Each structure stands twice: as C-alpha cells, then as structure tokens.
Length: 483
Image (cartoon, rainbow, N blue to C red; front, side, top):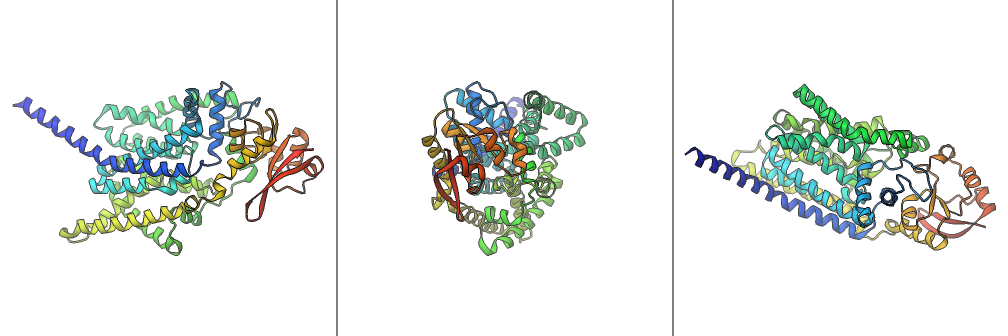
C-alpha cells in the first residue's frame, strides 16, 4: 500500500513539474522569436563590438588585447561574456554571429524563468503574465543588442528561482551558490544583487551565508588576481576612463527612462507612476510571503539609487534594463492583490481586465520604443559603414585614431588609438584634457575618424579630409588621412 502511494505521489509531482514547464514554453518562444526579429533588423550596439574585438583577439591567442601589437588592457566590463564569445570564436563561430544568437536564447530563458518564478510566487495566471511582460520587452533587447545584459538578466532570474527551490533541493542550493560569482564576472554592478542575496542568506543561516560568500570569492577571485597581475587593476579601465574623462554625468533620470521604456507620449509619466504604485502594492504583498525573493525586491530600488544618485552613471539606455524583470513580477503581484478587493466571483474577471490593460500598455510602449528600428534609421548602421570606409582607405598595419572603436576595430583589423582612452590607457591624460592635438603629434596615426575637429591645428597641417558623413543634428564624421 505504501509503495502504491509513493508511486502515486511521484506521478503527481512529475505531472505538476511537466505542467509548470509547459507554461514557460510560450514566453520562451515569444521572447526568442521577437529578439531574433530585432537582431535581423540591425547589427547591434557599437559598444558590443568592443567585446567582440576582445573575443577575437583572445581566440587568436593574443590575450586581452584590443588591436594587433597592443598591450593587454581591461577595456571590457564583462569578462564572462567576452570569454564565452572567445570560446565560440575559437571553435570557428564569429562573435558578431554567435553573440546575437546567444542573446536571443538568454532573453527567452529569462522570460521562461520569470514565468516559473511568478507561478511559484503568485500562481499560474500571474506567472504567465509576468513571463509575457518579459518576453515582449522589445526596448530592453533592442537597447542592449549584442551586449551582456541578457546573460546578466538570465543569471539573476535563475538565482531567484534557485534560491526559492534551495530549501527542498540540494541541487538547487548548489546552483544558487555559484551564481553570485558568475554574476560579478558578467558585470561589476552585479555586486548590487550579489550583496543583498548574501546578506539575506546570512540572516537566515550564518553557515549558509558564509558558505555562499566563500564560493562567490572562489569564483571571482581568480579573475581579480589575473586582472591585477595583467592590468594592474581589478576595476575595468574603461570604467575608470569614463569617469576620469567625462566625470560623473548624473544624467540618468526619469526622462530617458520614459522615452525608452514607457514610450506613451504625454501619458508616459502618469502610466509610470501608476505602474510604480501597483509594483509597491506587489512588493508589500510578496515581502512577508516570499522571504527568499526579498533580496530581489531590495535590488530593484537599490540598483537605480546606486547608479543614479551615488554613481551618477552616464545616461546609457541599457543601464536601466537589468532589474526590470523584477518590476514585472511586482506589478503582476500588485494587480493580483488589487483584484482581491473585488467581490469573490469577479476577482478573476478583475485580474484578467487589469492584466489585459497592462499587457496592452507594456506592448504598445515597447512597440513605440523600437520605432527607429522599424523605420530603418540609418544611424543604426552608421558605424558599420564607417568601418567599411576605413577598411577601403587604409591598409593592414595602419594606425587609426577614433572614438568609434568597436565597429572600426572589429571590421577592419587595423590598430586603434582610442581617443576616449577606454582601451588605450596611454592617452588617458590627453583624453582628460579633451585635447587630441598631443595624441596626433605623439602617435601620428595614418587615419583619424573624428566627429568634427576641423579646426584642430595638427589635423589642418598634417592631414586632409578624404570623406565626411552627416551623423546627427548637422554634425559630420570626418575621415582624415595623413598628407
């Protein structure tokens, strides 16, 4: 009798797991399909090609160098993503081809994980809705094309799921234990999630928290040691250069977020504050019921506070993306909580109507956010075009001075003098002074690809403008060639 009951229980558990996984299939497929469509429309972010270039050099056995003959530099902020691309390049897959495919998969997997987390937290309907929110995040995927953001979001969502399952399964405890270290290898600001997770685990069980801390250090410290021995620093030089040259911009703010993620015109601000209010209700509902999800609730405001108010980070649209899936889960939970105020017979109808309205708002907002992509905006392929012109005007071994280093380095194979100093530490002092004259005098590049600078004495006397291209608001990119 006991054996029959055991088999029945096992059958029910297996059936339940199969049902849950089937519900995650639709968000996965939609996420992969939509992100693949976006990838087919353009070549990805200019900054993504910096990682692609490092991956190509690594695969060629040159180490973390950016261009032929250059010294090793820590110009990428994502070692894990770069190493993955380098491994694929070593196997014969070009980073510019392999990167977007991986991104599509990770975007779909994130939508699937958000679905599973939502089912665990709030039930099947809520989980599916949260997964769909994530899957149709066109603006998130468009604004991070070719970069590591989809990997970061997937690892974060996987850590949330593993943390909730860790109490019942040693296997999931093992998965959770390696993820904080992998997240920090993916991007430095992942420490804003890794730290709350570790702190909450320490409060729950000091032994488990110490173990998680030790494993995080075990995974991350080898890279930190390598970085210190190779580059003399564990902080990416590109980050130091951005702050040294541009300073703390402090431009991250509400207007950019509205324009890129809640693109509803005049109603954007109202829609955002309504969604934030619903998310706050969801956070208050989940906090006592889901202690293992608390670090992620904390991560959402902590992330934006750290980048906007403390770090005063540059206003790059992809900086806003990593914790946005948490907001989707909180919004869904808030809708569910608000629907509970309706009469019992009408709660499903109330939740369904609210869900349909939010899905429409999120979907329409994302559709409008990718308007430049749908309009075939020429600026999306501008940097690739510049690279092709540089390749046609130069020869192997030539030195090219430019700020647009990603596409030009990757597609031409030429040596690069990075005038922003992200990958060329030797020019940092000149870059801080915003004076390219000494760079031109000292390194005498064969070509310079610059936005303007027509009146620079060193360029007027020693170079001629061979080609110029309208870029934005009356500004021109000039391709200078040594006389």
